[in-house]
Image (cartoon, rainbow over all chains, first blue to last red; front, top):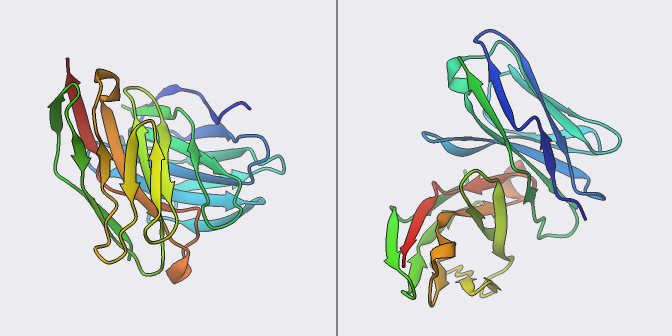
Length: 114
Length: 116
């Protein structure tokens, strides 16, 4: 099976712009979660989508949003970019069955805001 | 809320040395526990997991036992290799308190460097 894929792998944007990142989960996985990784804050949960509905949201401002499509692919959007948004954005997918709920991560999108 | 605390790093070892990376957690419910590994320039890979007390997760020579009484999930390996050099993250997911299993709470990560 193909793993989780994320596009693009690298992005450079200017402060004030907006950006959209894409995530394709493992085939058959219904849950997609997004995380932000920075040297200072570590790995922080952004949100989770399941069956096109946001099920859980982390403590990020409303500039961060996401959605999930009927084929489970997900996108996240960041509007009005700030320098502090520079980070590695990781997407993870899960079957969302049972108690274990293992998450499998993609390679990430490295966003640089200048 | 939930939290995960890992031992201060980085950790530097010689090849074939014994590895322990400590991890303790705080959770409102009865969490599942995970260790993830991140190699340079890559995403996170699931290394092992445990879902209930006294469960032992194991993979590629790494082991960790879910200790409910000490709220710990320490990672161990008997003989490390240069190829084990990476960043290791302890994490939990917990359905209690209104959160779902889809949210992982991570520790700060421990950088492991293994020298030949």
